[in-house]
Image: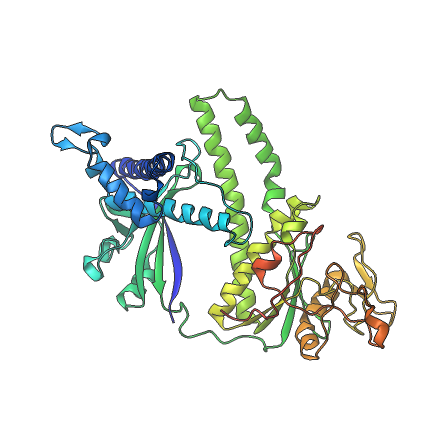
Length: 470
């Protein structure tokens, strides 16, 4: 079984290599815009049967154009004068990107694509376009176009037309996988990050990263994870015992005053000046620091949870709906969606089982002791009190315990509710008319479906499956 993963390294290019990188970025943007011009020109003509639409047709159209007199004429003949200064794969990959955008546009117009239909592609502007280009790896072994250094030049990445470019991080793990024929480099994407830093992302087709899975430290008992704002996550078992309480670093909230000061400083700089460029770089570096702190926290916690617990239960939240409320900044700073995605992938790596509870499962209003469902709680109520059995517990701990009980609830054969908005509301025919007791929804949704729901217009789930290891 093979997987597609990515190894990212920070490039430390020389002055000449940095100029070559910028030429490749400009060439990719130029090829994309020129292919789009050919498409627009073909659509405006009377004969629309020859419109280049796929990536393959766009590559052939651009290759024919760059050798014609329309691209320019010099002493060597007609054609694009500077085309030999950059790798030709940059032109081809830019045409492939445009082909994918056009196919997505067509699928959206025909109704074959879910979600909001994509717009027709636009021309890329130098000031706002993403500074990146992609290279395809050809050959294999020592004859591959994209290689990782070895020996004294271990921290090197060889790129076609650019040569050996030094990297900052260690490449030992990837070199070991390549040496044992457990990985193959497919693509290399070079881009700029905050502060003008260059990075290369190697798309690798590899065998599972963990051939020998680490033994789990705990038993494979369900552990519920309740995500919150004051506390990032609370872990509890099905018996109601709180196992761990994880605090969030809240990088955006902590660095927001500095972020505001630098934003005001940027707005006071003159348009097009060097000081404005420097202020923009400082602001970009601060945004990058906030992102790095958040991602480091999420990666560390998700790896630790999947290594120490054999069965995790997490609730599916309508984040796209919650992000429209007054809690949008706190929710975005906690990165609930990214945390859930990391748990899914790392549970497969470490051999743990992950269950995604249904969005309508009342974990906050349900009593973990007797199972009774009470009224909705406001955000200010931090203590859960059951009106049936008198059980009192911390709100987050009780919700995490209810999530840990979710697999048992689904195995008990509880029926799904018909009403879409509220799981405990009677439907038109009257659920209790036949003597049945009121039950809650135990239907399970996949991540991509529930993410597109909202608070005002909830979307009922249609897939009833548990998300286990990938």
